[in-house]
Image (cartoon, rainbow, N blue to C red; front, side):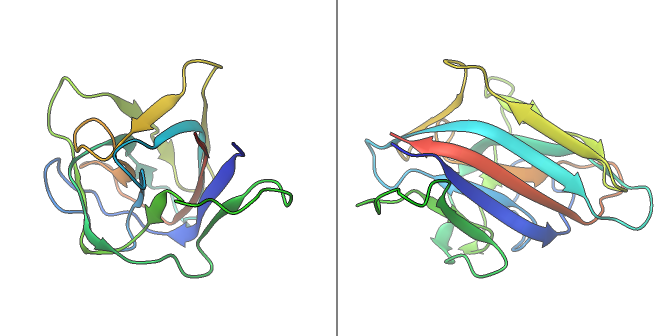
Length: 169
């Protein structure tokens, strides 16, 4: 399969505790399209756009509760193939930044999280997966599959942009 890029051009995350619904336009979430679809996350990049020092305590983590009725992406946010020669997917993964009720980040210590904290005043953080060590989303079961990039409590969040490069299998 071909790599895809899910990006949010500019948003201000909201510091949110675990197991609380994330507010619209404050996160990026990705889910498999079916119970058998697999997705490998290859890269996550966050870039600061704030006009003053602001620590964004960003986490990429599994969702404890899935979103209800995700809203289709609208420009300037987007999700598309990295290669122009890529054929359309029969069942594209579900990527969104808003929903009727937002997803909830996991609250268990036994679930994987990536800490992507950075200073949003021009700072960047980038996570790359080594081959065979990608973050995997398999199926649609919460706590083991759908995942979101969102801000954890603490810090003083600031404006940022982000992208997630992934590969549906």
